[in-house]
Image (cartoon, rainbow, N blue to C red; front, side, top):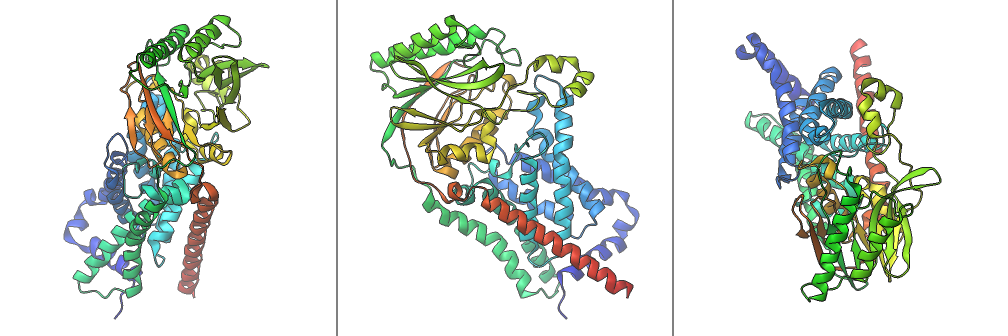
Length: 536
C-alpha cells in the first residue's frame, strides 16, 4: 500500500489524539504554539549582529512542522505567534526613545502579515512539492509587507539576515525576493525531508516523487548559490576611486541628537579638517571625494551663511567635493537632502530623499496620533516632502548613487540608482536616534546585500556609527566603532556591468507572488472538490 502525504498527516494526528500522554494533558496542546513562537525567536537570532545566518533554516523547518496540515484558524494563530517571536526582539530598537507603545503597535501590525502567511502555508502544505508553494507564499507576504501600510516596512526580510551566509550570491540572481525564497525553501525542505525519513523508519511507504521533491527543495537552493558565485566580483571595470567617509559623531544620542545642530555640523567639519591634515602629512591618500552622513548639517546651508561657510572651509581644506547631508526648506517644502559641495563652485548637485520614514519624517494619521500622545506630534511638527528623481552624483567622472538611510531597505530605491548609471552606491545614514541598539547592524547588513545584488561598492557614512566600506562581493573592508569621531579612506572599484537582479528588477518577485497565488488557488480548489465529494 502506498501511503500519501495526506494520509500520513491524518494518521499522525490520530495517533497524537489517542496516545495516553496526549489524551489527558492540556499542556501538549500548547506545544505547537510554543514551538511557533520559539521558531520566530530562532529566526531573529539568525539576524545581525550575530553571524548565525544558518539558524534561519531550522527556524523555517520548525515553522513548517507546526503549520503542516493545520486548519486556517490554527494556522492564523500559529503564524501570528511566529511573527511575534521574530519581530518583537528584531524591532525593539524602535522603542529606544519613544517608549514601548509604538514598538508594540508596529509589531502587532507587522505580525498580521506573518499570520496570513501562516494560513497560506497551511493551505498549500497538502499539495505535492509543498515547500516550493510555501516558500513562495512567504515571499508574497514579504512583498505585501514592503508596500503597505504607509508605503510599507520591509525591515526583517529574510534576505537581510543572510549577509554572512552561503546563499548570499543569489542576491545577484534575483535580489532579496530570490535570496529570501531560497532560504525559506531550504528550511521547509529540511522539514519535509525529515518527515519522510521518519515515515520510512516507521515502515511506511513514501512516494518517490515526494522524496525527490524534498531532496530538491534542499539541494537546488544550495547548488544555485554555489553557481551564482560566478556573478560576484570585486574587480574594477571603470577604474577606481579613493573615497573618504566622515563620521563626526553627535553631542548626544537619542531624539535630541540634533538639539545642538551647529555642534553636529562642526563635528563633521572638524573630522574633515583632521583628514586634510593627515593627507598633507602623508599619513593617508588624498581622496577623490568625501562623503558625509545624513543630517550631518541639520542647519540649512542655503538659508544660513554661517553653515555654508563651515562646509565651504572644510571642502577647501580637503580640496575635493563633499557630499553633505542636510535638512533644507525650499518652496515651503522640508527636504532631507544630499548636497554635493565643490571646493571652488560651492553646491552643484542635490538629491532629495524619496522614501521617507512614516512616524519619523512624516506623521500619518496625525490627528489620531496627537490624541494618543501630543509629544509625538511635536517631534514631527512638519512633514518632510518626497524627492522625485533618483540620486546619482557625477563627481569628476565617477558616478555615485545615493540611497539615504531608510531607503536601503527598499529594493527599487537602490536599484534605480544603478539603472541610472551609478558605478558605486553610498548609503548616508543617521542612526544616532537609536543609541547603541542592533538597528545600525541590521541596516549595515542590508547594504551588504545591496552590494552583491547590484555588484557595486557600497559606502555607509553614518553620524554616530557604524560607518563602513563594503566591496561588491559583500565584504566589509573597513568600519568604525559607535559614537566615536572617525574617518575611513579607501580605494574602491568602480563597476559598470549589471547583474541579473538589476536587469530583472521586480520580475522575480512578481513571478514568486504568482506561484504563491497559483498554489493557494490549487489548494482551495482541491479542498472544495474534496468537500463536494464528501457531501455526495
